Amino acid sequence: MVVYRAKFYSLLNTLLLVALVTWLPASAAQSSNSTEVAISVDKNPIVANDTFILTLTVNQLVSDTLWQPQQALQEFEVLGSSSSRNTQIINGVTTEQTTFNTIVRAPADAGDYAIGPVHLLDVQSNSLNLEVVAAEQSDKLLDQRKAFIKVELNRDQVYVQEQVQLTAKLYLAANLHSGNIIPPKLEQADIRQVGRDSETSEIINGRKFQVFSRDFVVIPQRSGEQVIQGPLFQGQINVKSKRTLFPTFSSTESITTAAEDLPLRVQPIPPSWPTGHDWLPAELVTLSVSVGSESAPQDTEEQQFSQGEPINLTYRLSAIGPLPDQLPRLDELVAQLAIPGASIYPEAPESSANQRNGRLISQQTVRVAVIPHQAGELRLPELTLPWFNTQLRQQDNATAPAQQFAIIAKAGGTGVDSPQSSQPVTNAAETSTPTNAATSTEVEETPVAASTVWYQQVQLWQLLTLLFALLWLLTLLAVGYLARRKQRANSSASATNATSDNYQQHLKALKHACTRNDAAAVELLLKRWARHYAGRTSAELSGVADELDHAPLRSQIEHLQRCRFAAGSANWHEGKALWRAFQAALKAAEQRQQETGSVLPDLYPR
Image (cartoon, rainbow, N blue to C red; front, side):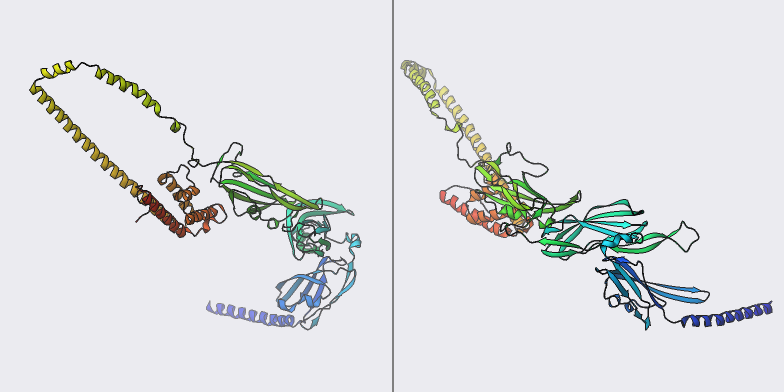
């Protein structure tokens, strides 16, 4: 058994050695084949400015750096290149191949153009003759073209920063497998897609084409004669496979095509445009203003506004055509409004953009707080914004109407006495005088003899008993009075201590909020101070400044109001300065109270 096994292994080794000796010469023969380089194009003839794919094939695995298409195709525009590698071993024969696919744009002038030969690895490829046909004669190539793009502009003459719409239609004579439309190009311009793609079909010269439409907006940023480079399509289409016996199976084929370039004349801003205003070309511009928030507007006919109470307004600017960053800043325009007797604090604007019916719509919203400083009629002037109407090709104006409010004086500051306090008080005296007169008359008419008789009839012990009773009653009354007085004093002292403790805690909380630069907390604590400790019925920040009558404190409070109502409310950093000013104002108020002789608790913590 061992002998047969040894003979089997010996025979197997012999067969492997024979196979190896047979394969090595074949492999060496294959590797010794000469290098071959070949070029081809996917379509010929081709329309001017259209694109084609140049394929370069090398029967070896080579590096990507060996192929420099721009040097070999100097008369053409190279748009991009890709490579692939393949290695196969069949019956011991190894084949290798490197393929370069380069997308090339044809020249704009019709004629015949030579491509190649290409020199690579000291090997020369074949050469090609490419026929370029003028765009006017492209219809005769429809029977050969599998894909092409048509483009059009809604106008070929616009103003700078004016929107122009470009529509691209991709025609495919085969089913689309995958692909991408590269947007058009224009230097110093903003280009973006609007709307969604639409798909239809057309029959041209008896051939059915799938048609994919896409809209772009082009907004040039400089004036002059310009050329828009048309969009480019790169993709794959389904074709019947030649490598299978089943006709229902299909494979893909790479395809590319480009649209023709489009001239565009861009005019500068008209010299008649008003100085100091931003240039705004648009199809339509609207400017509105509302009182209150957008979700809960106020009715100015029924709503009353008090002196020092903020009036909230919302301005909205809407424009069809321009981008959001082209809109002028509403906060800067509102800040320029002159409002006598009031302060205006606009917030930072909010911008947005959306698309509707293939149109680009930009909006800007800004919220404004107006604080009236005096009672009476407050008029907010209208806000006017000039813009250029691209439909009528002339200047137009968008206007937010003027607003008028009735401002009432804050409570406690009118100085008008109540009607009851002004009534005369002589009626009580007049009614009490006759009663006293009648009583005195009756006393005078009492007989003197009756009182003498009463005195003689009273015994001595009765007088003493009455005297002791009166003394005892007076003692009880005195003790009760002293007890009640002591209780009231204790209660008053406790209340005073409690009020003083609460007051000190309130001031400590205010100091802590100022140290942290917490604008909202400082405003709340100042309003509570004015209501609970200064006795003001209207708890407004302006009331604190009026109560203490201190110029530095008033300046700090106005700065706090600006930070609270204007943009960047979190950027208030004057807390320590406000606390120092508040302390100085309290000390000044205490000195004034001491000079006038009034007795009040401490106005600041020790």
